[in-house]
Image (cartoon, rainbow, N blue to C red; front, side):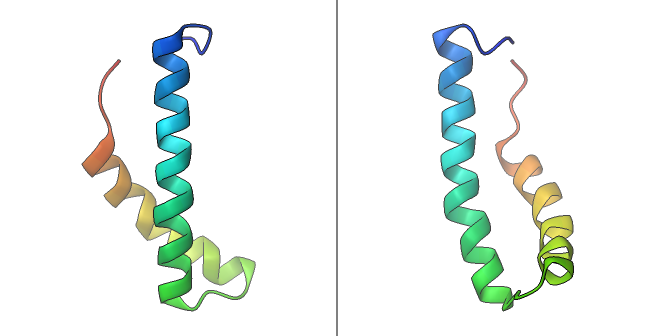
Length: 57
């Protein structure tokens, strides 16, 4: 779905807000202080996030 429609823009904004809330919290809980540590957290975070929130357009 192209981001030119209101529906697509809403999906993008919701996912960005969710990522900002959840990813930052996961990084803080993991104590990630370097890019390598953050990448390790992200590698585990994305599959869980996608399994929970992914919806086909």
